[in-house]
Image (cartoon, rainbow, N blue to C red; front, side):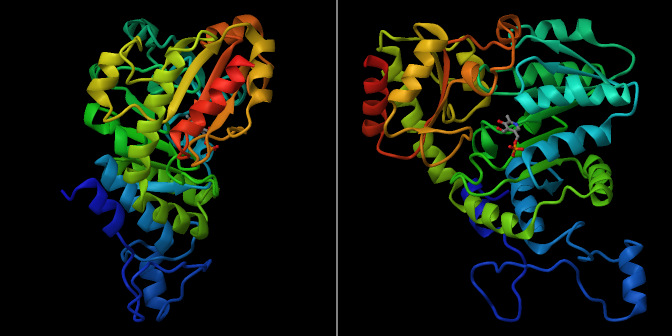
Length: 387
Ligand SMILES: Cc1ncc(COP(=O)(O)O)c(C=O)c1O
């Protein structure tokens, strides 16, 4: 197997007759056939080739091949967004009356999928708390098919033990699906620990520059074949332009992530010294409750730091207003540092009890540490915390 950086740079769509060095953008909806026989054989899948860009396209295939190699997976399919990857993957795997077990701390739209939309098809769920992986087995029912989790979690930056999740899934013959968005394939490979499918919102660190939306699911050839058939007919395909951007972005993922992680650790260490910041959480801080697990399964700690600001919702809003360099925005994983206060924004519709159950305190602040000078990021945070 090639090294990560070489996969990132050298996995390329086949060169055309122009002998281009950098992969061109294939903006084409469909492909032509030599004759009726070739067309028949292609549709019958006797011949592997591009037919229509909702199925495959050279740019999306290149992007998928890179992510699959990086994650140690056999195959994959690329989606228009991270959420279409989550939805299409689970909709492929689950039938009506099936049951899914998930960590309670999942991205807001994934939570909505489980609580508002899957019940339309009688698909039910049970949640476990991030620190209660040992309770999963007691939640398993005859109709349980999937265990789903994110690690690190959004926005609480908690860590789930992938090896333990893999062991439980295997023992009970369940599929383990991991949303690996916060770690990226550079920092963590869930398949090594027993995951069957790995999902990414490529919108975040994979693009890394806040430009395009995208998603991808990778896993065994057999499972991806099912996901491909579902998706080729339902139409959540990634656009060739976005695939081209994302594949280029992957070329620099390792170098970008090295700096993101270095900056994030420095920001976390700074926050630990601040009186107005409590419960600073970063996977590679020794004080993180799951530090040992993070060290076992992640190469570095990622770029997200969370902390609680003394003074609850009002203090959180004031802190956000005082920021001058850091962006007030809903995205994460950008070159630009982004600060969010979930209780007054993304999670403002949740009651106090619901917030607590999701592990979100009123003062919780999430920092997606960017690639600006870390001295400048810290100066901005210090100023906003103390004025
Ligand atoms: C962990 C996680 N999964 C999935 C998504 C959804 O991704 P997208 O916005 O690309 O649909 C997000 C978005 O923030 C996320 O943070």
